[in-house]
Length: 59
Image 1 (cartoon, helix red, strand yellow):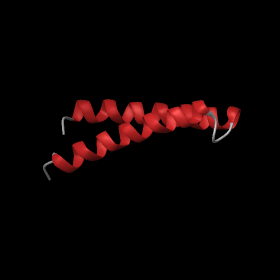
Image 2 (cartoon, one colour):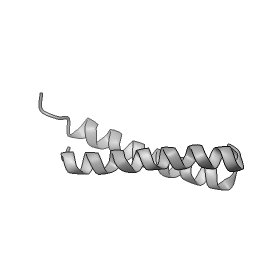
Image 3 (tube, rainbow, N blue to C red):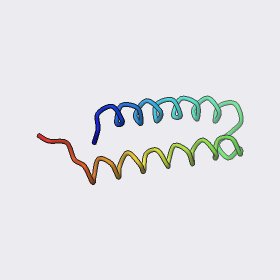
Image 4 (cartoon, rainbow, N blue to C red):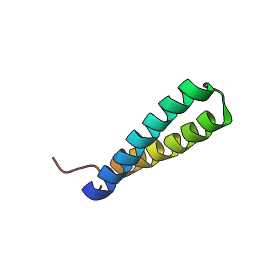
């Protein structure tokens, strides 16, 4: 996986994790906004997983 793309994805994941934590505290775990952010985060994590599985780094 391209290191730049991986770093970008990881930055986005970290940002969404922080947003989700804040949103859950403010609106609750099952609020529409919390669920929306959770789904976005799931998508990014799936993409990161697929990229690292199909293109593992050289040792």
